[in-house]
Each structure stands twice: as C-alpha cells, then as structure tokens.
Length: 360
Image (cartoon, rainbow, N blue to C red; front, side, top):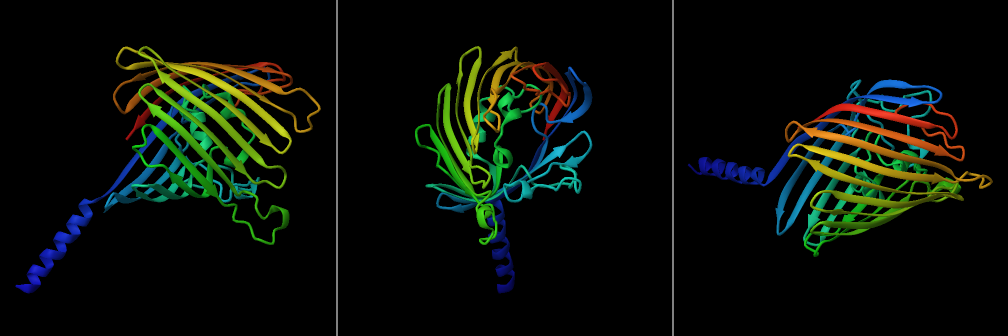
C-alpha cells in the first residue's frame, strides 16, 4: 500500500512539473516568384522569405515560481525554394563563415542560424545566452513597412557595410528590461569573438556590444540603438533611431541610420506606411535612401534610392498572398540592383515579388 501511495505521489509531482512547462513548434513557409531587371542582365527565380523570412522554431518555457521562468528558443532559417538551410557565423567575423570554394553559404543543412538562446527571466529582467539579433537591427526591421524582407525592404538593409554583426551576433550575453516600466523597454548585449589571447592585433576581433532603449504606449513606439564590433582593420559602428505612429487610417514609420567601418562612412534613412484595406488587405509603401562613402575617401559617396509599393491579402490568420514592386535609382557610380539582376553605374533596377506565406 505504501509503495502504491509513493508511486501515485511521484506521478502527481511529475504531472504538476510537466503542467508548468511548455514546448511548441512553429514556423513560416514563404515562397515567391521574383523577377529582377537591370541594365546589364535580368533574372527570374523562385525565392524564399519575400514577405516573412521562412523559419522553423522550437521553443519552450518552464515556470520556476516566484516570478521566475527558464526558456529556450531554437530558430532555423529555411530556403524553401530548394529545401536548404541558411548559413550562420560562429565568431562574428569573416573567418566564422564558410570558406569560399568549400561549402556554399546556405548549403550546410539545417542550422539554428536565426536564433539559439537559453534564458532566465526574473521580476528584474531577463538574461539570454546565445545567438540572437543585435539591438540596433530591431529598429531597422520593426520600423520598415516591408519588415526588412523582399525587394521592398529598406535599402539600408541591402547596402549596410557593417558585415557579420549587422543583423545578429553569436556568443552573446544579453539583458532585457522587465515589462511594466510604463512603456519603457530596452536591452543590452555583449558578444565574444572567441579568438586566442595570443592572436595579436586580431585577438579581440568579433567582440562587441550594443544597446537599445525605447518607449511604446498607445499609438506611439520610438527607440534608439547603437552597437560596436571590434575589428583590427577598423572598428565597426552602427547607430540608429526609429519610430512609428499608428493613426486611425495609416501606420507611419521611419528610421535614420549611421554606420562606419574604420574611416569608411555610410548613412541613410527610410520612411514608410501601412494602410489597411477592408478587413483582409494591407497596402505597404516605402522610400529609402543610403549613401556609402568610398574606402579611400577620394570620391563622392555612392547613393542609391529605392521606392517600393506592395499589397498583402490575408486569406486567413495564417495564410497570405502578396505582391511587391520596387525600383532603385543609383547615383555617383552606385550599381545596386534588385533580385539578382545586374545594372550599370548610375542606372536603375526594378524587382517584383509574387508569393504566398503560410505560418504554423
């Protein structure tokens, strides 16, 4: 009888512990027909993530009591047009990417390149360890009408000069402010390049830090962010400010960004809007410009301007059809082209996305 009661007690404790934990699988499959046109060559292809980046997510939380919880998040980027995984970077440097001529980027198979974190949340904030977005990237994607995806995305995202840590950083230690601060939110991160201490001038390469502070209440959301990555060839700086205001008929958003790598400078801004159409549609519009200074400083900044217009039609809460058109005009020797096309200096380029996105 005692043994039976003991088994029942253990089962009850195990069931209680399990009830306080949760694990889920989610993701997005987004594929489009994409056409790029330039003065030199055009390209038609099937692409992935033109509306939302395709991904596979495993995540879970455990309630530890007293306002504390533990969590994990593993997120793999998917190339849905051919079934490959997306590449990652091990040390926030060029050496952390696949070597040219060995393994092609994106062909390493499934990798949790988008996010791989484990965290501990308390009433005083949350600490996360692993690979995740750098703080300054949040302003670039959240305040872009096209979410930094597809041919319509801000040209700042297309032409950023900040390299491996322009979006994410590996080997990070991050802190997030707790909720309930009257609309104030923020985060800070430091990340490691993991080089040997006797590597000389490159021993700290890939090591960096960043922070973001914002305020969101009612229709308003504004934030400022900055980050730095050590690079023996020239320190990498990236700072921006962005915001949005949700009016009754349109959500207006914008961002300004400054970047530098050593003596090289770049800067640009974007302005966009989201306009609801009926109960299922949304018009997206954006204008962005970016100017990149030459490495030598001897010539004028190369300037590229982009205008984009898109429409999303939601067939359900999880499935959407979308279409986007974008056009780029280059100045001062710039040659940027959309969607894999090739264009000459100071010439234009255009791109079209026609696709479907399904989330699960």
